[in-house]
Structure formats: C-alpha cells, structure tokens
Image (cartoon, rainbow, N blue to C red):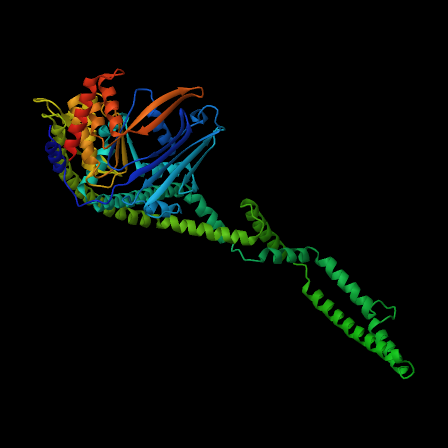
Length: 584
C-alpha cells in the first residue's frame, strides 16, 4: 500500500479548516512507582512509539499515568522501601478549550500550559495538584480526560456503545448548536414534567385532607378569634367569680376611711385639721409648713382613692349570665389551643390564616395543573421539532461517516468492508435525542451488514476504532492519544497500514502507540524503549528515547528475537527507510 492511498483515504474523511497546534504531553516525571525508581522524560509532538519486551514495564507506565489521571490506587503501588511516590506531567494545551474548567474551579491557568501532579504515601493517603493548586482526585480525573485519551483493547468496545456513536455523529455533523438546542428543550420538558408530578401528588394528598382542613378552618373562623381576647376574658372571669368579695372589701375600706363605722374617726377630716394646726405654728418652726403641705397632698390622694373605690364598686356586679358567657368563651379558647397544641390565641389566628391559604391553593390547583399541562404540551412539541432536526443532522453525518470509514478500512486492508449507521426512533426520547444508533458492519463479500457487536472480530474492531478516531481527529481538537497495543490480532501488512493512519492522525494530535509490531515501530517519528535492569537494589524498569542506531537494533530484536542476525538488521533498516519514504 502506498502513502498516497492512505493519504487519499484520510482526505476522504473530510478536511476542515487548518487547526491550531495540537495539544501535547511534553514532559513526564515518575518517581518510586512500582518498579520505576525515577523517570524524567521529554515527549514530542507527532507520532511516537513505545516498544519493549513483554513484562518490561509498559503497563507500569500506563498505571502511573492512570494514577495521575485520578484512578484509584493504594500503597502497593509505591516502590519497595520507599515512603512516597509521585507522578507529574506537563501539557501544552493552547489548542484545547480548557479555560472554562479553570475558571469554574478557580485554578490559575495561563492558557497555554498546565501541570498535573499526584502523590501517594505509604499510609495510603494521596494528594493531587493542578498548576500547584491542591484539588480533589475527581477534579484531576475530570481534567485528565480532556488531556489524555488512553485507547486500549478494552476501549475498542466503545464502538459497540450507542452513546459513543451518537457523540461521534454529533461531532462530525459540525453543528454543535443543534444538539445543544435539543438538550435545552429536553431539560425544560423534564423540569415541567417533574413540576406536574409534584403538583399532582400535592393535589392527591390535598384532596384527601381537604375535608378535615375545611372543618378545622370553619371551626376557627366560627370562633371569631380576637388577639388579646384571652387575657381580657381571664381578667373579667376573675372579677365576676369574686364579685361579692370585691364589693365587701371595697365597702369596708370606704367605711374605715370616711367614718361610716360610727367611731368618729374621719380620716379625711383629721388630715385637714392636722394640716391647719401645723400652719398655725409654721411661723415658729420652719418644718411645720412643709409637713402641712404633705398632709394636704395626702388628703387629696386619699379623697381620690375614695372616689376610685366608689367607681369600682359601682362597676363590680355579680352577673351570673355574663359569668357563664365568659366561662364558656374561655372553655372554647382553651379547647382550641389544646387541640392545636398552641399557647395563645394569636397562634390560633395564624393557623386559621394558614389553613385558609392552603384551601385556596387546593381550589386553584386545577388551574395550575391546566397551565402546566399546556406548558408541557408546548415544550413536547418544541422537543419533537428539535429531535427531528437532530435526527436529520445525524442521518446526513451517518452517511458521510460510513463513506469515510469504508474508504479508510479499505486502505487498512479490508477491501470488502461495508459500514452503515442505522438510526431508528426511540420509544421515548432521552437526553441524547430520539434516535437509537447502531453501527452495521460487514468485512466480507456477500455477507450482509450486521450489528458490529455481533459480527466483527477483535482485529476488525481495532481497525474500525482507529479509523473512527482518525476521522474525529480531523474535526475537533483531540487530546493526546495513547494506543495501548491496538495492533493485537493484526497481521504485518495490516499493521503497516494502521501505522500510516496513525501518522496521518499525528498531524492533528499527539499520538503515542505502545506496540509489539516492528512495522508500526518503524513508522514512528520517535521511538522509546522500555526495559528492565537487575542489580543489588532489585529489579527496575526504565524508558529511554532511542537514537537512530538504537532504533535499528530494537526493531531487529522485534523481528528476530533475542539473537539479532544481520538479516534482521538489514530488514530493520529497510523497514525504517520504507517508513521514512512514506512520511515524506
């Protein structure tokens, strides 16, 4: 297969406007993680490959990246004999839309670079940082998903998942406002439906209680409650209940002060007479006049007291009918207060008003329900229109995506591949739309397309997923993509074609591929080797970037095994020269 064939297949996937410089992982530091003692690596943009024997530590490096990106981990990950491990990565991020994330979480960000760091101690405690700002691991994970896409064999299963296919269609359609408009309409309808549900429950509960509430309200209304009434009635009840005692006491007091007892001791007259006598001697003693004035004041006060007692005595009257009324009224108030567990009449008044409001609400519920039903119908109609627009957009994008996938799959050694995106109506729309989306696939002649989950082999799914990501890379800013042995189950010639597609992808995003195949290793612009060493300190994993000469030897090892022959070296040089010619 020639470079032009792969290039033409990639161009068939659509070439959008020139993109910004891709986001890249530029530096990685791993310290005391598993078998890695200390790793300090610079990374390049474009297409890089990582090679090494099975068990050399490639999975350890991915584990360290997983820890950095917020995965759960424990103290067993720490290098034996050490107290702490950490992983730190620097990303060049000018092309990624990350500002909103940093603004939302109040983290410093210069718009071009961010640094992620996570530490783990032997006690199991971990700390996470973004640009030196402490954050929760969940925040680290949220940002990490925007920075690195680790594509493993497990992730190939995504192509069988509907939400992934829907996201791909919406991305390739290139009109983000349409799914956004649908999502807004769906959220509005769900909110109204929830309000309707709550109001219906309220209505059902209210109707069950309405009769009792109305009885309580009527009882309180009929009581004609008045604020301060209880205290007034209690005072009157005391007076009426003791009218005879009150009148007797007042009468005797008046008699004592006004000489009605026949003793000749009229207190008022005595005070006046004493005051005159003091005035007569006032010219002889200075205090007599003051004492006389005080006696006169006492006489005036005493006369006022007598008059007040007389008026009070006239008001106090034993009235059995009034006493019965007051007592009955108090019994009514006490009974209502006890029934409703309150301490005063004001609380009864407030309860009466509250019951009245609730009854009014029940009366108005039918109007509120009708208004919400009308609103829900209008929103359902709007959602149907948005869903139809979104479906039409996805159908057009599905046809184009199928054509682009077929072109790339043919370039990847599947000449009879056929792909179709099948959209069928959902029984009930959900947050993603009104469409069920299925990827139909056939790799062979005269075999009808079927659901990819039922028919595709592991190698076919790997190439499908690679092709899809290659197409996506040309339509949106992608993070760094790490392919973890995506070539499993792929033959040599097919591997070369896959490598060429990854080369094309690397023009739009940083691509790092962990591989066991020399055909893919030779196509990388940069090659890193993972290896182990053993010494008195134990077994350790290392990774280093290879020089051109070291690349020849490493690829020769991949071709021939431990014993590197001259034929393997010649073959490795030929693979590298061939890959270099294709990349020109």
